[in-house]
Length: 119
Image 1: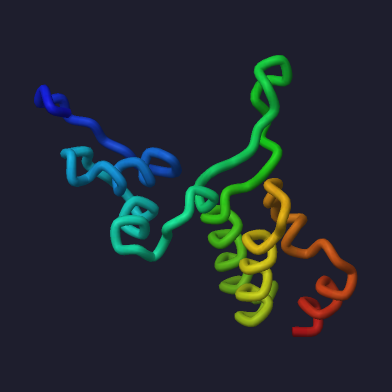
Image 2 (image 1 turned 180 degrees about the vertical axis):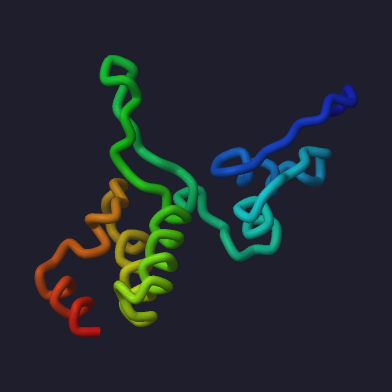
């Protein structure tokens, strides 16, 4: 960047790094970048995913929070879940003490699943 090379970042870690390095000339693109730039997103776990080692083809073992939230918003828009269920479900994986946030983690406990269906 200091040599005039244009560096862009978007969609996931690129968006996060673009927001962090904007002062040094990195340019961000897209809604995830804008959310980081505007302070709506702050943490790395919003876009980070865990994955298996090379021997297993780097298979993802978690889901980024931005993807979990987008799925929950779509489910609410389709009438599959309520606004309350969306909000509660988006908090659950983020507040989990594990590093393996998944869509399944949103609805892990039987009591939570029953509550979501009722609401």
